[in-house]
Length: 318
Image 1 (tube, rainbow, N blue to C red):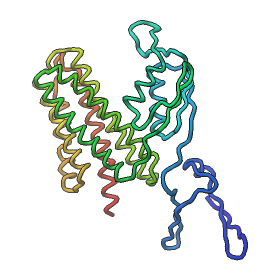
Image 2 (cartoon, helix red, strand yellow):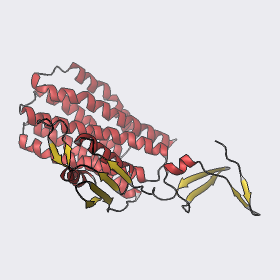
Image 3 (cartoon, helix red, strand yellow):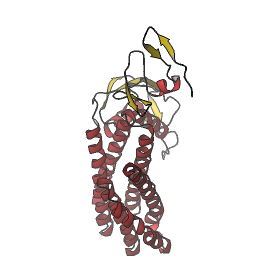
Image 4 (spheres, rainbow, N blue to C red):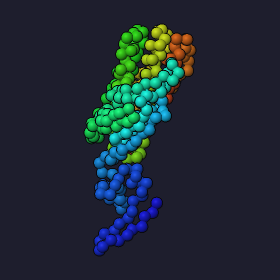
């Protein structure tokens, strides 16, 4: 796009900024931009974090699943405060009893307490709830620490799942559901911090790709644990062995995330074919369906996350 330069006064020159870019970064009159000059080019960057915008969500016609998704997405994007217009009760998604409803205030309170780090309900009634971020901002170093916490937690969960499934320890499997919820909570928080940060749009795209797949990996943990608790039957030794190989591959990815090494990345890539071959040759028994369904999803997410991370690091080195 082109912009015409206008002269104001004796030594001041002005060019307009695209309104779409202004809106995308929540900028207003009086805000400041960082301007850098390099080899004849000027680069404009937003100073500090994006300003949060308020939003009003009408969930009167939504069920619990869609309402939760809308609220989580608004939190991730960075809206603050979030006002929710609702009915006293909300329809429960896939409830066993047709038309079963929950208290909307209790439903939203559970989401805020279990998933939205830093946010609190500051006002509520039978028809309206306001959620406000009271946690304050974090610097980029702290944001990176959140990402490392997520990685360590995923590694711990995968190792504990293997031990629990190997021994068919249902109590431990049930306990692991709490860790999966904590991981989900941190993933949502990290995503919110990313979208409020001042990193470039290309970096944000890569990091969001990685985080989307990490979130999916955590989701496969949740489904597998739920399946194990539902069937209550031990998985076969063959299925445990195949799943163990995939989880070891995930742990290698975590190591790569924590400290990138090009030789380690190449070694990681070389192991892909052997793991895929073990998945393709696996013939699940009836009790192994939960494991069988998760294998392909896990490998796909591991590889999409790995591809984005390796590509980013190679680009940084050149």
